[in-house]
Amino acid sequence: MNAFLIILTLIEVLLLVVVLAGYLIAIAATLSKTLGSLKLITIGVKAIDSQVEPISSDVRGINGALEQVANALADATRGAR
Image (cartoon, rainbow, N blue to C red):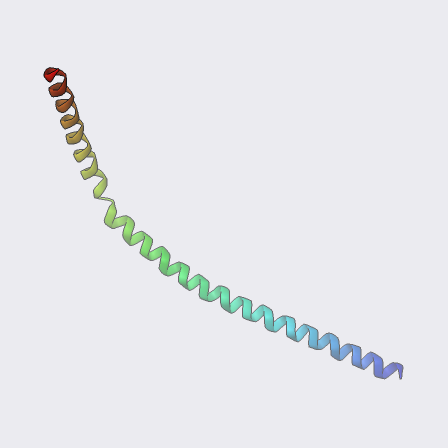
């Protein structure tokens, strides 16, 4: 009877290890798919960054022009009072 219980316990432990290994393999596969998605997102963000980079110098020019307009309007409103 003792030998039967020992064998049964070993089978249960083996089944537990197999089930846990299956879950770990499933988690690893999900993480691998997530890594692929993150790589695609990184490529997209880098593309957006390279496309947006020239805008910063243009925005500085527009900002300077708008400051001049704001100053001119402020001078004009002071003169109208």
